[in-house]
Image 1 (tube, rainbow, N blue to C red):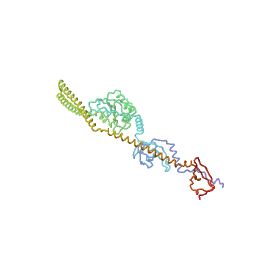
Image 2 (image 1 turned 30 degrees about the vertical axis):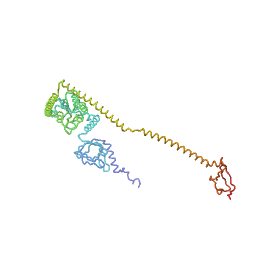
Image 3 (image 1 turned 90 degrees about the vertical axis):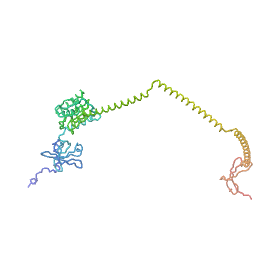
Image 4 (image 1 turned 60 degrees about the vertical axis):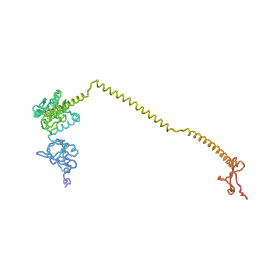
Length: 450
């Protein structure tokens, strides 16, 4: 039988499970680019590594999801069980288990979506431009005469504001600047109404308001034109948009934010009864002050009238004062001068009494000076005579004189004076010093005296 007939047919290539999962993962990632997916969070777990693991589900299906720490740290919130969210994710496969899952790149709350992101971007932009700085905020007028309102004539918020104004300050005039507060183009119309109020400048404070609603309902107040119109308005602006938990760009740009339209009206004006009560208190205080001032003025006038004298009497009084001052001045000048003279004379007498008589001392001093000079001359002569005697004795004892008489001084090689023949040895050299110099002499022999 031929060996070729018995050979097994060639088989298909064999791949591992890991290679299969990797191939499927690459296929999924190429087929499904980054996609926004909405669903409800379930089984949320935050690992110690910082990664988020959860299940994204709806009424009919679910899918595993993972958001790694590098992406999770930029999320604006941490999802909780049951939260409705929207995730931007990449469809892939977890190769270790072969589970289909999505890798989440970004997450946001459902229902807010792009509107909330647009709100945050615009808020950050306007804040960087300085529209929200506290230095731009203006104080509300203390006594507003006219209050302007920017809102829809059909809005319930208008009725709330008018009711609050009528209740608190019925004397205040109200000017309505009608504008749609919801729908297409509402932001531009609100900004135009605010600009109109600023241009007319016929109110002291402006209220921009509308009732509550969803973020889509309030979106007209998140318009950039509205923010600039509020910031550039001539009069202070109070924003009363939505309920207490609602925030819009208009709230940040306004000079004051109110939780509700009714609260905006209450902040804009002070109740008339409060002003009337305060005015009455001021009237009472003013009357008391006027009475007190009048009484003090009357007492002051009485005191001045008692002190008032005729011009002649005033002249006599001034003349008497002048004479008294002149007498006092004269006495003040004479008395110190006389006292000074008396003191001077006393000091002269004391000096004369204490002054010693030095004439005898001078005579004695002259005699002592003469005696000292005479004794010094005598002592000097004696010392000179003694010095001459000592000089003569020294001259007689001078070795040079002895040498001049023919004697010599003998010294050995070490310079020692030779006084005994035993100090000499032969042969040796000695030095002879005579009056005119010295000489080197050789010693042939030494002969002691018999």
